[in-house]
Length: 241
Image (cartoon, rainbow, N blue to C red; front, side, top):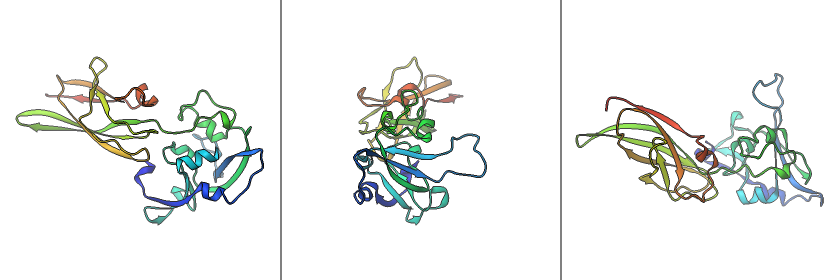
């Protein structure tokens, strides 16, 4: 996850202020090196994304030159990569080699088309202006379950992470099977919209068996499309209670 690292760089909007575009060029194309001698079997060639100036400025997008206090390594996009906080990583172009102005009617890039489904687009937009911002919804998932013996009784500590969203989730709810009600996660502290945090819930299963773990924001007004669809659904097998 990109937010695990400490990044240093230059805000893109400061760079754009040094240039002027024609009245018909109102979007920004940022491209990176993506040409290899052998053809990829899993990805469409062409690393580039088109943004509006406002998207770059409001998101705090920047060109990163250092990660965790050190110059970028090749696998992380050296010498320069784009970081767009709270956007999917597919929009955070590595190995940046071009920044240019393009017209309003510019087609969506091959990379934008490839990741249309992952970024929750409606179909595959043909034009960049038809492409919704590739921002992250609120998401959460369990990553570890510990079996504890407390005061003569067995209990399970479900530990997970939460990230994303244009506004922090004030509370999370968790469900352990479709037939059971959602309950509020007991130990949850809202994170900022640009990083992630841990949460914990103490759970006592009623019997042995397989449980399907699902989460959602407590507020129905918070956007969490992948989370509500079951994309982050996980299961655990409980034996020998």
